[in-house]
Image (cartoon, rainbow, N blue to C red; front, side, top):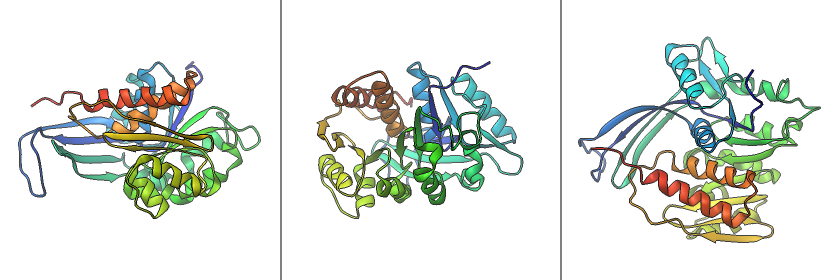
Length: 297
């Protein structure tokens, strides 16, 4: 029997198709590079990093009962990510994410997470109807949650008694989905992991530094906000004050998944007892190692 998970990762579990080139790109560019297909999705990216750090993550998501889904489930198991609580749909296909990256960063991306959205609350049944928890006996561990869920479902999670005992860690998945975190901002629930752009969208305000953005989120009700800003300083903001740290300077070879790596490394550090400053420094180092990884030619 599989051991009890140490953390739950709720959200997108899908196939990433990533095209990367060492060339600087613009709209309409046609350049040589590499195209890879890898297990991905925010929830799975976080789970994989957690597993690499020695934790036992379990996934709550939707994966189709198609050949792509069967292969993805097998890959998750190989990567140390529990899938026994994943909702397997007979009529919904496995989701996909496609991105193009150049030397100048992310050029474009499309996330097809429609099956996850259509599955809705069915992915949460292990937390609301057992075996992981119920409304009367809520799960009391850490949960990493991503914004690929619908607004209605995220609103439910923000107020559900089944989540009242959880250590909620929340990421928007992309700037286009930043608004989906509003229920947690209004409810003052969880730790928000956002970048500068996403913080601005949540606050309806333009920020120039991560510190300003974290302060803005706290002023609007956030219980805690951790704001990244690319190669510039990152800020962890709580009612006890702001902590700022700068990432190591590295050559950037890839960007897709960097935020997920940062979030996972930060969670691992805090679950291990690190203080806020140490956790922030460790997470920035892990993200720097990730983005500087070789992509080949």
